[in-house]
Image (cartoon, rainbow, N blue to C red; front, side, top):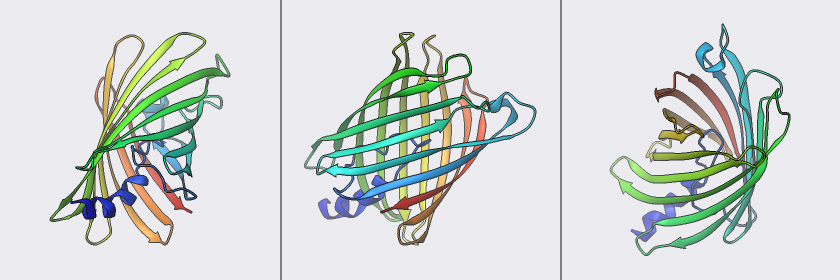
Length: 230
């Protein structure tokens, strides 16, 4: 089992969800990962009459054996100032004998909108993950939970993303994610986001992902991301 987990772990390091947490597995010291993800949102998601293109940039680096640092920037709407950016540090806390992995994270950044160009935000979080072996290939399960605070308003957004992934024997990576959040009004929303990742060459992969709201969310979007490992 431990040998299987050692093979699975590198797959988990490349896991992205909306450019957010990459799960609890620490990135190897001295190695890095980056993704550029254009996104096309439907009219309802963008509050517009036609689909709109926007996207994000995510990067992380193994700074020490148990520390991963990174940056996450996302355009959150169609207007110029609808951006979020956050720098984070993730610390690997514990790995059990059976392969359960737990890490904690702290992020500090900003939320920008046309009404308020720069609002500081604080994002503590915790992640759990576990690998498994199957007849179709090696896979993983993970849970990433965070609480995001806008320091100027005292508002809090709670998020939890549940992910299951598998890398087939043919090299194709298949990922299913349930993204949930609870806003400051107590409204809970959920989206499903399946994706497929294909390796183009050493260090370069391409991700095709769709997302659609299933609870208190009418949004729909398509992402085509480029993943780079270095």
